[in-house]
Image 1 (cartoon, helix red, strand yellow):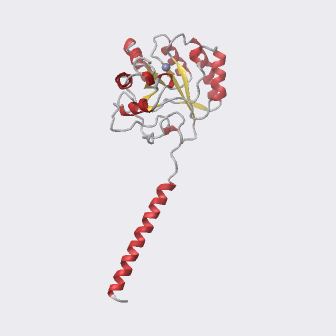
Image 2: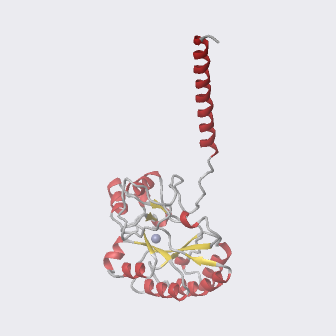
Image 3: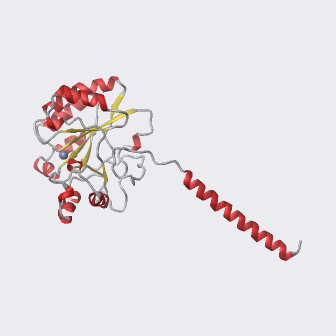
Length: 255
Ligand SMILES: [Zn+2]
């Protein structure tokens, strides 16, 4: 084999190795398993959750670092988990009653609070956290974010309760709202099960709707503010032992 030909062959082989290598790399990147679907988050661009829990009190939202997926860290275990969530508080009458029922049944939850309610009722936020629950933001004043000017939308999202989770009031969202949530270092968190407790359909109806629709890792929407929540409190006290008997545990989201 001439020296020139040998060089030619060697170069050719090196090129072939490069081509095969890059083909394998492309194939590998395509065969990567898809991210687990999390119905709770409306944005599909949610990064995988960090395994460590970062309570909002210690983790100032950083615009540079995307917020963790609030339920993904729990989604891979064998545990039958449900994520209870309570909106529109903190309320001086109803939030302590909800906390009492949760503690009675060894359950935790995530409270999507309003900045205006936090300011009006200082101390309740700390009670919620001290009991092992987490807090998400539900905006400052419960405005419909899709109907606001850019400046007001920014205020409602950026100046609300400190958290990495944000639930838009009425679930009203769009690309602009989601971009603002992301820019504030948070992730949008909606829900899977809505028993419509806010409409006060009766304690038994709330219990039945939860039992009929709750599945593993679902987020359940309830309210600890916005009016008389006695039906919600009573329904919670009834439904928690029934779900526990089915093997469910009740976890606070990573917010
Ligand atoms: Zn609300």
